[in-house]
Image (cartoon, rainbow, N blue to C red; front, side):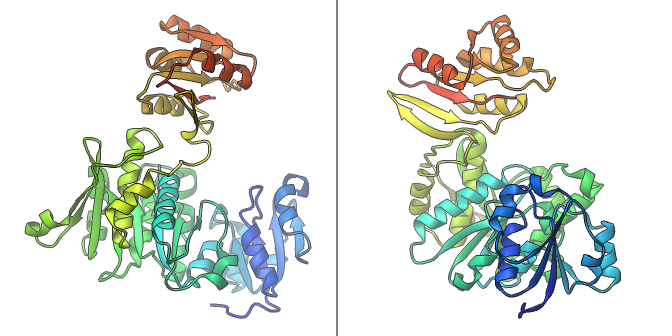
Length: 434
């Protein structure tokens, strides 16, 4: 592990439009490394990211890669999105140049206790929930959230101590590389595993193996696994985690979050069952109560009293644009679910709302069949405000399914139309489905 970076030649492969390589570039340059940043995209498509590293004295190689930057370097820091069979990474390895990732650089230097969250669906929300609960309840410790969510934590390393807690969202791309530093988090959370990213991993077995790295190097006598209590996960993970000391399986009993520890003796199970009947969430839906069960189980694992964790969860606002409660006015609750860009996502959001509903649908026409979302809107909502290119199509489909709908010129007009019709106790939901 490199400790002194002054004068080291480091190539950062992949700056990214959303700043994926910004944090590591800033950290390396500040530490004195001679950094080359290379990306296939030209400068005009990386404007925001380039602004973040302006003035650091790094060399930019944009719009393509130069093989010399890979076999004449001391280290390559590759974006997790870069496949292992990249000819440039192969050239680096052939020249004996080590390849690492931003997350590996962080975890092998981080002195704090780490909570890692992975899964195919829900990992961002659970990561944010866990971070919120721990920040609200552990006043004597600093809690940081990063990984695949938020920003790089490399620049925070000087301020992180052994008593702090770091919560990391971990993708399969990131976990694919963690065996190189023989690392797994102290508390690992696995939400669910369904086939995903097979264009990168080729097979479900390979995708699953990458996810399993989250427990691969856990300390069998100390560390904890928190795993969704689903039969499919039991089948996939039973052999892999059978010898872990602490395995909590979380889920719902009706709508009540629960968790049960797998124990060596079945007779001990009664003493290892957690139940949180008084959980009140600002984010709606059964799936979020399931997410809450995971967050509460993690809080228990790090020693947070149940009543404090429940109180903290009640103030969790949700992630921006994901069933985010943004306002309660005149007895009407408003939710922003603008991340909903498919009919399936809009259906999930509408079904998550239990109160009388008014929904805003529509947007760009991608040629997708919107009739399933229109049928649910007709069944679940008193009114659908339809906008964008798909507005007229949605309006006709909702009416054909027996619902009330109108075409609105823009989002402001749609909100106004819903507000005019809303009554105390109603919910107005923006979930475009497009």
